[in-house]
Length: 169
Length: 195
Image (cartoon, each protein chain N blue to C red):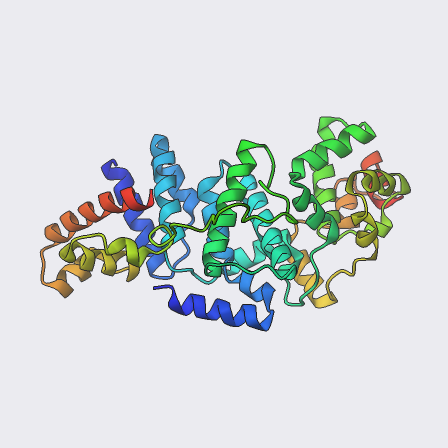
């Protein structure tokens, strides 16, 4: 699901266009900071720290063992967590190695890939969930496309949302 | 998960999948007491979902937060980079300035706006009072020298940046002063504008 994104990220990294690379994640950064922070001001300050930190690491020539989008998500999580736990904007200073001991990017297969999360659903529910959560189709459109009733689609989505809550929540 | 939360999540996820930019905070408000539950769900979804290109509104926001987001590939302003590197929040720095120079809480908003301009490069560090530069030097170390030498973005980019900021430099001073030929200056203006 993220192949095209990861390919574009590799191209921008190779070209050294760090600003464009980080800019492409602005929407994700502010949206996740908004849901993880208590106020809009806190969210904007965390988002600012995330961007400055990513740019700083990239300029220092940092290389990561995982796709860049995973790094973005991890930095968002560390930054917002640290903002409240320690009353500070970041957990680790920019010139320290954020990897530390072990690999903090382990176990990211499902957590950062909706397509893989949907694979955990039954075949029938998966198709409905893909059309809704990846395609953005309305309930009626899904019902028509799959030859199901609206009620059947609703029930299927209900099961999918429960499962997604376990996997992503 | 309550039916209400399910529906809010469902609506948000479908809109996101269609390439829209739903405001997550609006959905959290609608969730009421179940806000935290929905937040965890939306957060997990956003971490796994396809990355959407930034909206115009988001681009404008980041232009005001990080000048590097300007079209010209300028370096991150040294004071901003150093503050983030040291893990200080904006409020911490603003409180420190207020305490250092004896400003009351009623000056907090004004100091905060000036600080935002200073750390993002809208207000040149070379133009602030010597006593503020000296204080910043104690707190920020070598970064203050880089900040004095730092080149702000090109003119066109600065124009874009100004649209994102509420108001800047002398405009701030004029706006917060009574109308008239001799606008009243206060101690905060003197500190940041070296009047």
